Length: 251
Image 1 (cartoon, rainbow, N blue to C red):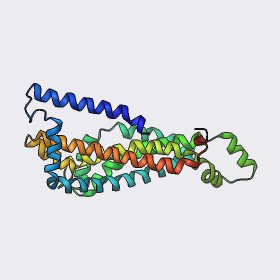
Image 2: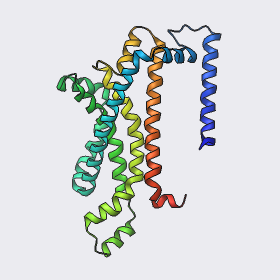
Image 3: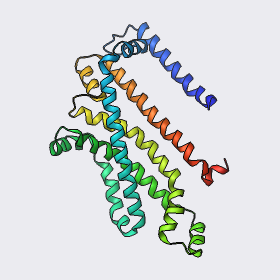
Image 4: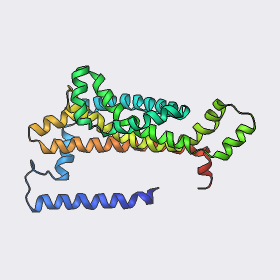
């Protein structure tokens, strides 16, 4: 695991060194492009100014992500169990992702106000689709021979679903969870842009309007860190839960 991390870490260090040297060599103003050391310094010295913003965003992300997971799984299960409904609604499911969130968000604010509801809806909209689609694919690609054997053994549709199809869909489900974990952070920041009192999105907007580019990069840094943390949590859960899965036995 450590050896696999050496290459991307090395590339990142090289990029940061080039960035630092370039800003100093070309004497680029801080308000145009701050050096990495300036960004780190601002992140450390300004912790008291934005720690409550981070806590607010994390709370929003976790809540929206939980709702998105629930909605995505429910949609996937319903569309799998009821093929006719899947044929009718699956195109609409895809079309729902063609609406730009940045355009839909102001409408949600108009409909639901400036409270937490439109923010949770935005995160749910960006999270549910990857989970729903990946889970549906996982359920549909269950080994047909095993389904046949269970039918021969007298298993009911409910038993086939709970004991075979759903467990076999778990790896695909985690693929969707990884995508949704990163989307949830993006959705939270976008929702905060459109009307919030606190959050990383608010902090970024205020920093941008006051030409504090270093603080904008601090916000971007913490957004990236949150994405990596949520992604790492999903991967850790995947490794723990999928130890039993047949696909892991051959690896």
